[in-house]
Image (cartoon, rainbow, N blue to C red; front, side, top):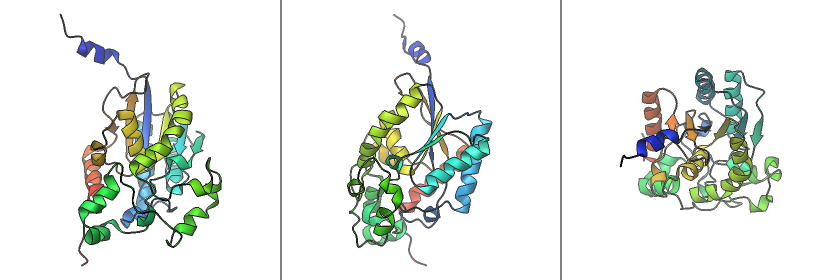
Length: 270
């Protein structure tokens, strides 16, 4: 009997396309600090990355029907710049706190490399990349606590402000993101709409983990550089029919991935 596997793989055609995008570089990305829920703007480089991404997606023939962002300015601004570069400014943009970056708790504002020097690279890697380890909680004594929780954007959420996270593991990001994914994003994809999610490193990693079925261990090695679109081709059950594709100059993408991975390494003061 002939092996039907190759034929079955061919028949399992791509039905939907989804693009995930980690926002362009922010001011604190540049300073290697945990930004998280602090509303930092894009750096000049981040603005350029977003525009370049829009031009690339336009060249590839993308026509978006709907864009989802977080409530954080760097995610929203990236979406605007991408759509402007594509000449698709009219495309609706829907915002939700459930696509926010992972809440890094008491680590917010701290420099990753300095922390690696103090606590060791392994501990910082655990906090940054592990699936189910939650960093220390933010409390009212933290310098950014009031800035985050007094911000009126969080009065618009579908949960009371006091129930918003005070720190999260990647698992907890996926837990708060999944209800929104299932109730709001998935129905739009299933209608045949081409969707862009302009999110954050960890909200995009959480979606990848869910859609691709990445293991708890392997998700630690999934790195997304800023401003690089990730194309997913999905079947009728929203399962990938081929590996994710990071679009753009592959040598530049690999260099950008290495830069992100090096952020948690100790640097001696000079």
